[in-house]
Amino acid sequence: MWKPVLDRLEAQHEVLSVDLPGFGRSAPLPDGITPTMSALADALEDTLDAAGWGQAHVAGNSMGGWLGLEPARRGRVTCAVAISPAGMWSPRENAYAQRMLRFQHRVASAVAPHADTLARNVLARTMLFSGVSSRPWQVDPSAGAESLRLFADAPGWETTLQAMHSEQPRGLASIDCPVRIVWGTRDALLLPRQADRFVREIPDAELVRLPGLGHVPMGDDPDAVAESILEFTARHAREKNVA
Image (cartoon, rainbow, N blue to C red; front, side, top):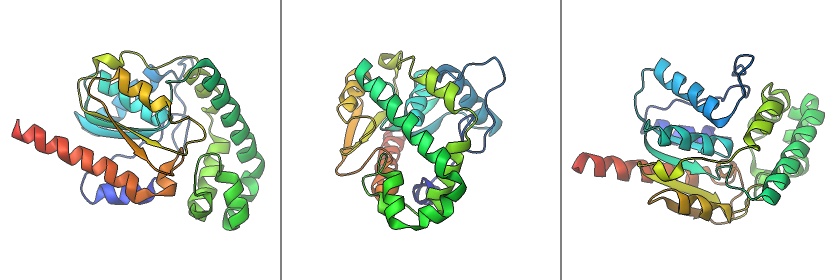
């Protein structure tokens, strides 16, 4: 679901799109390494090193949004855009999110063999993606089918879920780069009130609410997501040059 956003970003920036360890087409972390946010951030920094990148703008959604704040805390990031980042949940919200994610994974695992056929059907597509999208009927069928298969087959799913939901973001007050928190007002997985908790913890963080968009707003309105990232990075690039 990131592709339309990536197309916009790639028109103005060199972009490195990362599959986190154990998800997408990336192998899990080595045996014996628990996929905590710190361990995943280490892997992300290794990827940046391998690409020859020093500091970078980062943008991520959900777990990826939280993960983008980790290298920001370490001083590796020029500016960060965290879209519905995970982690700033109450115990009840944490339990709710886990139940939702486990249900979605069971559904994805059950339908993965028929993903292409189901994703082409607007009613089935609407039902399958309603948990993360406020406009699930407009999810691209091929992208939707691929995301179902990758989600169902993710080897890092269970261990990462357990690790992620056993901790919360740390050291946010030490972040000294510009941060924008972006949240869809119809996020049904991570409730929009969680956005204010990030803003309170991160010095000078901005909050942008995307009216009517869901937890994965890239599929609902990719232009709005791309514009939020591009405007923020361009503004802070200008400010850095002036300084």
